[in-house]
Length: 93
Image (cartoon, rainbow, N blue to C red):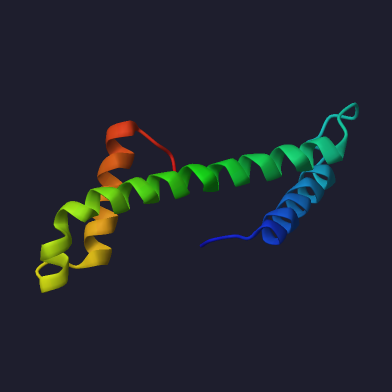
């Protein structure tokens, strides 16, 4: 699921409230700093996944003829290549 900036903002705020309600944020830490950290973490993760997806698309160009003939399924090939790169690089996505 792709999140836009407003959705990431809302999710970050929700998580900060959840952490604060459970008293999991230290008293000397500003909740705004926690929210910003959560937002940045989610955003950066999405940027990394976008880069990985672009790399997968570049690799898939090698299979252009097979994809156009219908000999290969685009989504299956995309997911297979992506999973292979994730496994090889020991990524967490």
